[in-house]
Length: 389
Image (cartoon, rainbow, N blue to C red; front, side, top):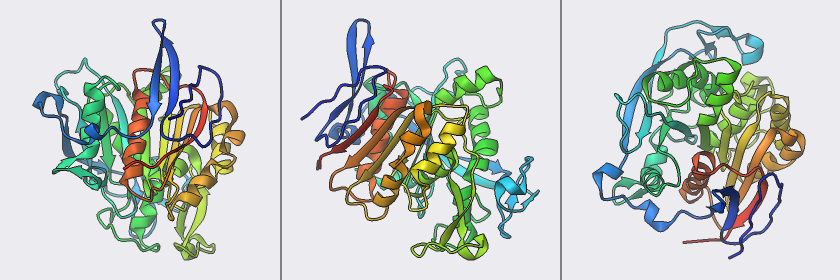
């Protein structure tokens, strides 16, 4: 097992590392504290036995005022121009949507003094807000929730709230089928408005979060964005790149007025404005083929007044769906973004495909780096984690 220790403020590029790499090293009380970048410990997949050590998953419904309607228009209660949206913007009645939310052990609504960081985890093209929990289970329990319980119990992260949204911001968000000309697919490319104006405000008004989106002062924005993180798998990984960082929206070729990709029928339209004022920690797990390239993403990062503290990308090297998009998103990103990225991790998983062995592992490492007991080291690290059963 090779170990690479990255000292604070030193940019290091590490290629071809087998097994586990030491991804972070800082001085704490005179001692070097490390976060190991590697595979999920097997015990972390299993449920804890003590009730007081176990978080809970709750389903919540809320109103959405920003979404795609049946006429492919953007319904919004905000002052969004058609030029920015890339389509007509109209007013309309809200729709009701849902999300799942993990509340850590000990969370109590009435305890307003105890505040929590929030991670948003986005699902894939055929999934729902249950994809992350249902995607990997252990004897009827959710591995992602077991993982969170273990990380909190062992003091590797502070107790954290995790939100699992419905990723289709459209009137037909319940439709999980894939047909590129349908509005439920178009809705994936407009989740950013729902996040900004509906979901995040709801979460932060109704749960005890450290971040407060209602505080739009420069000091408030700078503080609050460090208490939010977002990651997504497959189509959700595209969303974190294209919508959070700032890449291109897509629509079916005939509606976009451009040739659609032969593989999926989708064509790029307008560039999303990005949401880096809300998120300092961003992750993409096996990003979908419509993800923008690294230079496009880097230009958006460079143009933003806000720096990404942590950018984490991962993919399996046997992933026939996403490996090209993953490599394309990395290519030229750092060179174009410059010092507007702090820590930039590129984690390739040996002999892994388009599945939860990559995605849960990504969530495990991303959580510890973003909300761990020690801060992410501002380094570039490109590694390959060797195959592990």
